[in-house]
Length: 106
Length: 118
Image (cartoon, rainbow over all chains, first blue to last red; front, side, top):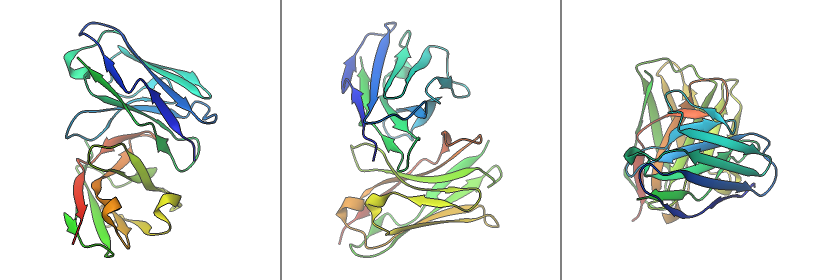
């Protein structure tokens, strides 16, 4: 099973600032990497797939990069609605696996 | 806009079988993938199983052959059965499907909380 490790566990930022979240895979997942956002009491929301492709309706302030084992999600200017938990997930090998999440807080 | 809604018992007795249904509304049950994911309270996400449109299924080995999934297109329903449940199966269970051809799941149900307890 591929282990996904996210860092940091918690990221404290101010509205309008840039946030950079990292995700590392225990072995190469090519570009088969997804980023989800989850708010309390809600289902995850797809942000990025194939490492860098934004899902429909996702603002351009969200961008993904990386390939192989190292990936990054960047939020260029944090808005109030962006404070949540972010998960990366690989879908290169089954079982598809999630990272433990990064909480972005004010 | 396709919507998914999970349903099933909120409380299941240890060693019994958990059965959940995912109802598809406001759209077609046609999809390249169907999946089940769970999230224990306050913890992270875990993929349980998925079905490809060909009927191929894959199950997380961590479930040790306790899970089975099925799709009933006539009823627009996707189902999960999990046998021999324990307290470790207590979680929010989500069904999900992608809008496109690849396994990027962008349509999720709201989730249903299942507690395993006597």
